Length: 179
Image 1 (cartoon, rainbow, N blue to C red):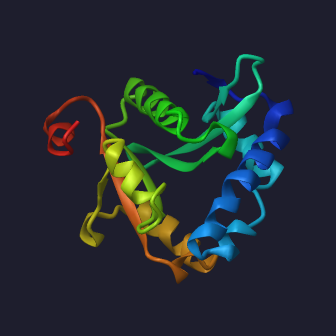
Image 2: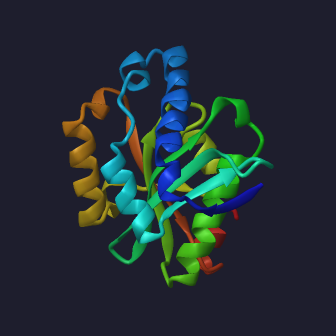
Image 3: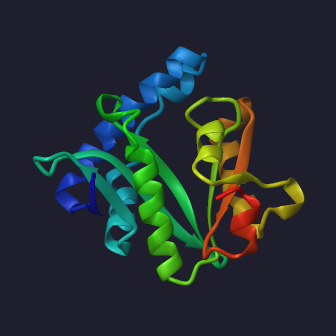
């Protein structure tokens, strides 16, 4: 799977991928999440301009999945990972996460973080398999607490949410996660 930085002309495709991927939430009793609007083009543009919007592309160089991230604290926070259902269960999401981890490590970040739904099979349980671990409330940085407040204001706390981290650099923290 080839991964590269998203181009500005592809940002509407990222919105389409997010909408298609979101439909799966209907199947787990979360129709409000399934019906959520995709990220606005202006927001996606900020990630693209920062160089932290990556796409996984098919053999025709068309995006089938994307990941956007932002630097917070000393680390890198994964804001969104979306895989088109037609490309799901093929390791695309994991490849994007590994790409973001390699980039973050090269930038000197000690960890990737993300927030996700605790009980959705392709959310927290999946991220554990990708080397992430749940963070206890006491472990949350001020930036992660701010992200959680924004999510709560958006109504995402109607379902259990969790913050997770994936240590980078192969140190003892990475060994503790089973990587």
